[in-house]
Amino acid sequence: MKLINCLTLEVEEFVQDVPPYAILSHTWTKHEVTYRDMNNRKVASRKEGYPKIVDTCRVASEYGLEYVWIDTCCIDKSSSAELSEAINSMFAWYKESKICIVFLTDFTCFSEETLVEIIASFDARQALEDQEDKFYKDPPPLTTDDINLRDKVRKELGSCKWFSRGWTLQELIAPYHIQFYDKDWNCFGSKLQLASVLSWITGVDTRVLSGKPLESVLVGRRMSWASNRTTTRVEDMAYCLLGIFDINMPLLYGEGKKAFIRLQEEIIKSTHDLSIFAWKSDIEDRRLFRGLMASSPSEFKGCHRLTMPAFIWNDGGEYGITSKGLRTEGLIRIGRGEPGVGSYYLPLHCVDERQKKHILAVKLRQYGPGLFARLQPWPRVTVVDLNVYSAARIVQPQYIQLKDSPWLDVIVLSSRTNAIQIDVPAHIFDVNSVTAYPQADWDLRNSILLSFHRPYFWGMWKAKLKDKDDGIAIVCVRSSGWLLYGIFALNKFPPGLDRHNIFPSQVEEILQRIPDRAVTRCSTYIHTIKDSQINLGEDAREIPATLLQVSCSKLTQLRNSRSGITRVQNLFKKVDLNGNSSQ
Image 1 (cartoon, rainbow, N blue to C red):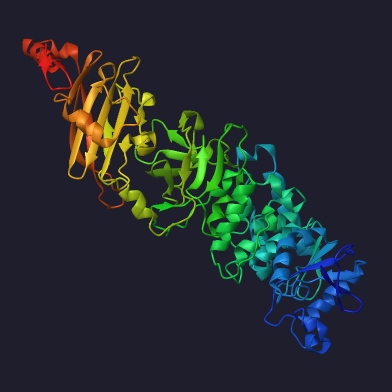
Image 2: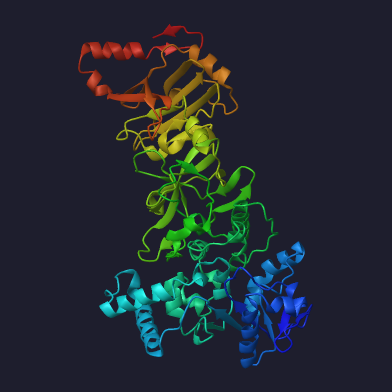
């Protein structure tokens, strides 16, 4: 670690036994003093940033410290290895400093009287919000004086460049002792004294500013602190957050936005915190589907109130990163009793602290064998309240797309082209008893056999009658230009179709040898099936598919007439596999 000697202004290097030091937090000017400049005092002293070094050393000496660290001139940026080590160590360096000196070049300190009023107003408001019942009622409205003070803080202190830069976020959080100085080097308060004011400006919790461990704050909430900050280089928007998530990773300048993707991947690997997926995209983003990972910290703006739920409900769900996406087991839920498409959810095990009612979740859409994508990631649409007690859990492993793709909309939508949807009377069948095979090929929530661009495929769907052990099975096979299907009572299921290793060609052969496959008798009902063409598209996009609709009639209704009895007898002639019928 390289440090500046406050007395000699020389840079000294320490491999171990690093002496106590002060550290500077500031915003850069166009002409800062570099590490190489420090070897030539004459060159260094002519640069715009040199007086800042001198004043920092003077202030550090006043605190009894002999050394300071300043990022502009204590890192040899010509060495990529040293730069990478410094960025990965920077959070720790700020945390281990004896004092952090924040220098605001674009701020003139408030008068002492005004500063006292500001701190008193913000502290009083914070005390109200910290009351135990803050989740159930709003604090009283601000007075006119309080509003005026906040306007003043926003225009004068909050508009400082220091509060908008990515790197200064960790410089605010990591050190315990911070002193704030205005452009004339007048000290106007410490981090603890200004905690409620700083929290209001930055969104960082006052408890974190007072020393609460970062690990106790959800990942999504921590991301929200950086949502309004910027960096000069795109990659630095990820690198400046390494310490806040306790992540170490190599720097690859030139990778652009991939740096933030890598950061999220490392966070996913190191923590079981699903709030990292609680982001919302901008309302102008009109893509129908996205991956689970955000494109930048700006998409976490709405996550500043995320907190843990008051109860633990997810007991065993696991996930991990694979080449197919996020592999989940026991996490994806099916929303029961909710109409419409897209009732698959990934609960995020977090709540809005203002309500604490339901678990937040993101909507998913199945688009491949066990494959899902995030549906409509817009504000107020993607992240929803989910009553987990009414949501069935998908137990077998599933995969959710992690990264965005320009072709994701096309891939997901075309997976339903020529799909087959089953529709049965909900008042007769128990929707919770539905099973299907091959299970990975079905959108079970919506009873849709997905095509996945396949020219030849088959599926089987079963459901029981309400409060009965009887039920029906629907078997279908589709190829280019034709569709075969049949409906059967579970106790009269055709031999050969109950095997799980059967091929579409075998299903086709069996169905073709059964002439009366559009009607069956189950319990006290006659069930018939017919097909029609439907559109599974949305957002003005047309996706042709087939609907297999089941109609049910009670046997008592058919027996009311002699012709009805005759029809029933004719319908239930025994059919062998050779196509011969008998009474």
